[in-house]
Image (tube, rainbow, N blue to C red; front, side, top):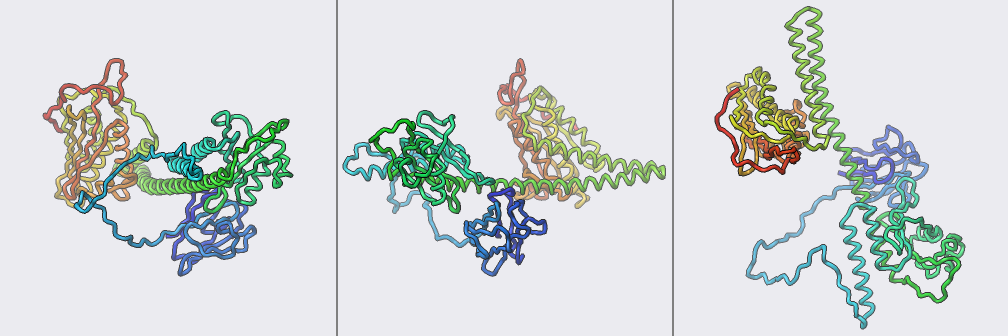
Length: 581
């Protein structure tokens, strides 16, 4: 599968799959294009991607501003994975999954072997693996400089690997440069993806850490670096022939400067700049030069590493945005389908209500109203699940009876169980300690599980009328573990191991079009917010058992306890005597 991912422009983060069965895919501003982009500099029909026998080819369709592949203007070009296509201000990356070829066999020895004579001499943790410098190496200064350069590159690589935040990364890199170069000022500037103007992202002065005062740098030097795509070093910028016409150099009093391009895989993403300055009224004759060619070479290498990190982070951000958009689309599609089914039920019930009113038929009227009421409950339950899942909330614990909460749930579903002919058994303990929990949240979590159990039994009985129809609920406490449990067991058709492992995933439902796939996900979220969890044990054809685990937290004086700070009582207080309801 090949695809285009927008990494720059107003549609940044969008992903377009290129199906191999489609002969061509057009790109442009018009809605008739299969790939429509919001960019005023793109023609109505700007370019097209054609699938050939060997791959994909991009071709310009006579656009006003042209089509560019890897910064080169093309009329037609064969695409390779990783190529950047620029049309207008929008940049897309072409990606194509490669066929995986089997790698060479690699054997890893699981245990000590007689012929394995290898021995670990020394181990250094990654975070402490520093490259050693020899301070008194007077015999080979070149080796000392090489070690110093390797040290800087190593620390730069560590900085890049430990963060995906661009601002934090550039700040670290600039700090490393100041440890190594005796500069007075420094900054890193990146191109804005929309305006393509340089914007300061990191700034530092010698007399402090991150500078707060304004900084004026030479546009002459920056323009030279960007135009020639090469780093420059000047021992005295005011006397350098290359910048003699640059009045900004004279005005800012730059004495020495190093400016290097931040060249990535495809484009220049910005510049890195350091300099030394002197007051315009002072010119210190014979002052020792601070910057050398070694500094320039190493800053070019650091700038390239930083540019690659910026590109990778930009690509990663675009991928995350694409995944978010895909998740939003899946959410909307799933919920819309379920809401549509509910509305159809309400419409059917409303039709019966209207018929009953017109004919003064109380039986038809009651039947229609029952349908409307059931679907109202469904949409209310759906909205509550959506709110519970979408909102990150802390439970509001109050002293209460877990047994009473379960009893209320049983009363809520008792009528529904009776209508379906399902035996609903609740086995409450006669003595149970008062706990600290959020009653509304816990009630919702238990109700979702019990409702699913009733659905499972009802569906199984339709396929096998002789099947036992029963849902059993129990509440227990364990002092040793410090856990209270609500156990819901049904005689439904059960699940295989693979299905059971996915029932708590978002939008995964075993009810087909009748389920939203939100109920168990919400129940798990609520239990985890309480510091507990929910598990399932099931076997195909044998029913399922869901266990909701709640840490036993007890009210304390002043109600200053949290959900995990209260002590556990000396005995669990559970009683196996049960009553049926």
